[in-house]
Image 1 (spheres, rainbow, N blue to C red):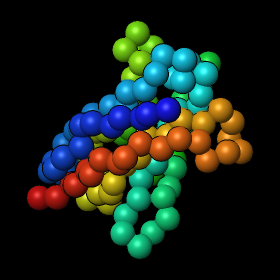
Image 2 (image 1 turned 180 degrees about the vertical axis):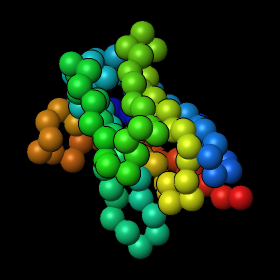
Image 3 (image 1 turned 60 degrees about the horizontal axis):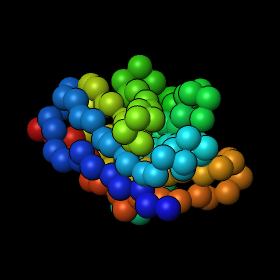
Image 4 (image 1 turned 135 degrees about the vertical axis):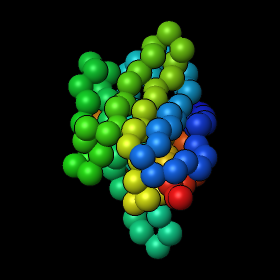
Length: 116
């Protein structure tokens, strides 16, 4: 299953950006969809997820600033990022998995750079 990300780029601190992840209709309806990020030399870390029932979870550092959502009509999930900080700089990856206990499928990653 393909996960195709878009929307990365550069932004100044305090700015906003929206990431998108497009996939197949059946996949987005039946899988836990999430966003992870990775910086050089570090492990990939969880950012946000949305379950098929619409339950959302966020890592503590992005709560109140990031919002994950799903548009089933467009077969796309989004990560709306506001009040971005330099420490949000990373490659962001889309992920979809049927349960929490398997690695699932990954997108190719999109770079987000927050810098003045």
